[in-house]
Image (tube, rainbow, N blue to C red; front, side, top):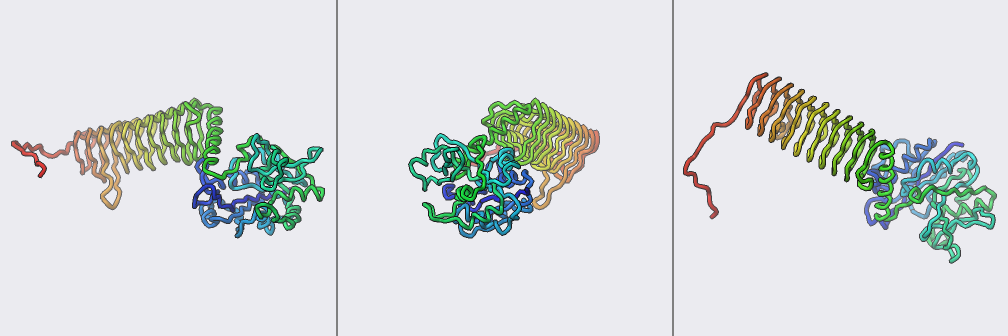
Length: 454
């Protein structure tokens, strides 16, 4: 039976205390709803329907890159049953509908595939879990034989029902034609005055449709987000799962509790990751790489054997094999380091190609530049690449030595094998294999009186 996924994402999330719709709050660097859409797509459904309401324009705009999503507006938020009913006109009666929630981001595909097993095609299958403290959740009420009878919301439960520890996660799958029968029969005669999707369970029992309750593997998989505290708790669990995956793949983490991955992180073997690593976007690391403490990696690739020392930031850059970077280095977008290049402490590189074995060791800025092989850039050197309106290129050939405290005024070319004397402000091209020095004449003014404060 073909599958259609319905994601409920219309709620405001008042306990988040935020003007932003709850489903747009980030977990692991992307919105809660994005996690759910991506999980839904991994199930290979024929359609994904997302019910939106509060902040609908903002939600659609931020997640517009998910092509093929059918956005369905719930103008009034009258409960989960009412939300699913908004999708009925779009559902094929011959399909099976899986209902997910935009604020329940971490349900695994393995768990959902169990719920969608072929044995359950004609049944209503729901996901449950058991909690030591079930306060706040709808309870699963069973008959004497252990079969599910109905779900009772806590506000409507009596004292005995509140003692039930098996709770409803809200996630369920049912034949679409059955939902089309049940949803119009829902009543809002309850404590919250809403149309509960959970009331369809009692309807299924009444008309003889099989009801299957499957337990979730762990609570975190079905944890909904209703407050910033819950979001922080689930973030830590999510990051710990990623840390476990990294260690299982051959990485050593100095402290698995102190790593944050906000994107996709591909990591090789025999890698050492020190504390407080922040990974954002698409990042890949080769084998035998060392990452120091307090490093930020964003949309970058780092090849085998590289050593990124503490407190460095690497952003939209490529780091070649056996390179050394840092400590306290910053590689800005467009940086490409060839093998064995070395970028030292308090050095900033931007939109520059640094050749094999070249070194920019200390306190320098190199931007909009092309450096050849085995170049040595002395401390305090800068490329003066910006004239106030446009950026200009600095070209430096192989085996060039640039002395300390040098300013290279672009556009400029330093030919192969040239040496630039320390303290030069160079505005003309430098000849190959020659020493070029461009300094002001020294002046000494004797009996100089310093100004004093009035």
